[in-house]
Image (tube, rainbow, N blue to C red):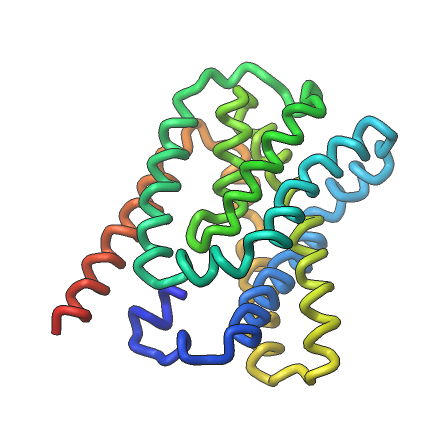
Length: 234
């Protein structure tokens, strides 16, 4: 949403369903690349799956699923403007920075059903464009005092199922309408860029602070708001 607005493209004038489907296609490309890059971690999770872990995964999935079903359209209509996205970057970046001040004294192995539900509620907040699914789940995990490596792991495990589910649902709808070449190209670009940059996942895992990531988001939002307001003024 921000890139087309800053470059003056008429992206916002496209058919709403097609535009949303394109955004999901980008997520699908990203998720596919992460499944390959993190295949050993995914295999480990599947091998260790039991009733407790399955319940935990379900609890991270249910809140965003229900929220999307009930509120997706109103959220997009009221918060989906370029300025709304830029403002969400600023707010989410500041909240992440504050959450990262919490003690980091818990491991992902200690995660309970309540933790999973709260991380799922954080993920539901990512329905607001610009909040970021990864950023929201990291924020929730740090608020719950998980160390950064564990927070990243819990964030990935919460995000991948919901992204794949959304991509599958939109994909079935699009299959009936036909897949535009631009959508395939976008998914391919997201897949390739994510695969190439996947070593950054390990960098984030070993980060001693999320301050640089929070600062990037705040700076991106502020600069975008300045540019968008300047464009509007002219």
